[in-house]
Length: 262
Image 1 (cartoon, rainbow, N blue to C red):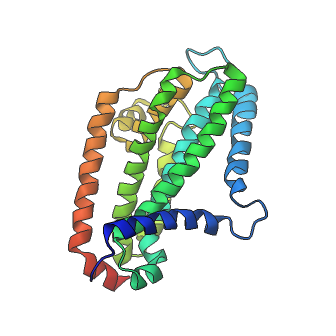
Image 2: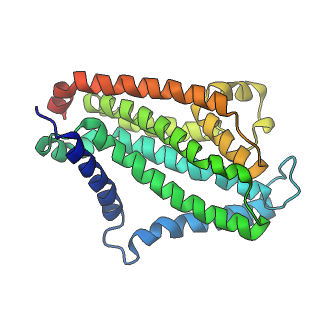
């Protein structure tokens, strides 16, 4: 099969990103505005209700809103990660009609989800930063590291989702398995609780928990105003990129088999 040239393939990729937003909010009066309305309500509830009225105090912070910020700075990135992973896992099956008509590179079909979810996260984080300005004034200067964390987590989500997408082509139960694993993954990661509040075995597990790698970094820059360990993150990112490159090669080798099964 002769694949679409790279230039045209990239244009189709951005068309898929645009179409993703159109399809997601088609038929609604407010359209893509809902992309901001729902997260804004979540941010306000988590920050003002959970943070001020219910949540525990965050060590090292005297603010009554600190726990709310802790919640939001973990849940927003997690949502983008989980959506990217879950949606990418089923993308080859979902886009089977497109793949049967357009000889598009398989990874481009998957990549549009990671890009769309990244755009959504950027828009929501800007709302969150605006709220931080209202509550605390200028956001922490460490916020400049946010784009690096965004690339890190979306590359991780895309890589895992791409692996899941290949497996789902041959075993459709993988999609449901990913949903179960994602649910459990949320609760074993310190997103709604502090890592120091759980048993030692759970704390030890976080060293090997890829989600904790970026969730902890988001907490560091947005809640504690600390600089994450960039060298360690770069090393982990290199490992993720290596795995992703291996998946690209596997897709090229299994191109015909994957398309036949779809």
